View 1 (cartoon, rainbow, N blue to C red):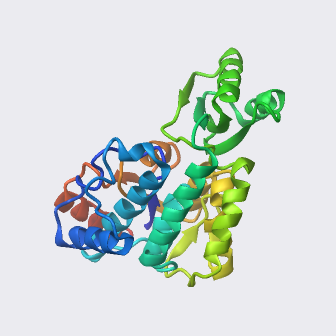
View 2: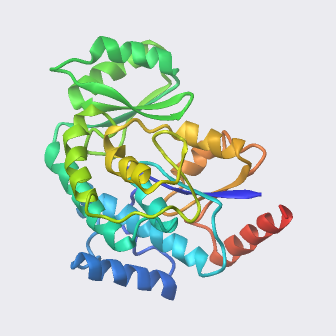
Length: 311
């Protein structure tokens, strides 16, 4: 049985998420390394106040994902595939040994800063539940314009889509979505309009920083959260990571691609269990597990059992 380690994106953050990681020496060493590399204390990085900022959110997600993965790797566990939703792709690349943790921290700090500076207020993201893609695209064509920018951002499932844009435009589209039969319209805890052309300029600036970074072929198979395809060449990874902030996320495609390749164990790295909810719709039969909230000994025994049964 092949395994996919999935790393969540912005919106999964929780106050205290770094402090709630297991009190294991491997985790503590990872946190200390991150603190030293960033040159700032992590004590307040995951506070409710700090997490109002995009930079803090993205750094916390990266650190939590890498720390959780190192904890499992220290116990002899390893993925067959890795994938990350948006900022989660950076943790996936680190765990796949394609990008150093040092470079990832520097790039993610810059990424969050660029995104936050580009749209400090008045923009965000909203989940639309219960509409198909064709209907949503029709509504987007009706609402989107220079004074009311709103775009498709995420394809999380057939009936769970995400839009990004100005608050006013998203409100207008949300009203039309409800009239068209949407079951729910939910603003997300994201303060920038990610995964659309509005972030093309910040992505280009991040790409300039990437030019100075060395990337390697991943040691495990890396699925792009944008294209749902395997990437192995360093230049393809560079393009994927630098530009994923302005490209539509196809997480539904990632899950189906993993399942079609034989993955039957989906493991969600910290924080949260948002991705597990999406994976259960695809991994049937199969196993979906979230690291957060699971006892470490129970989790380790479960993973070893699933891997041994597949041999």
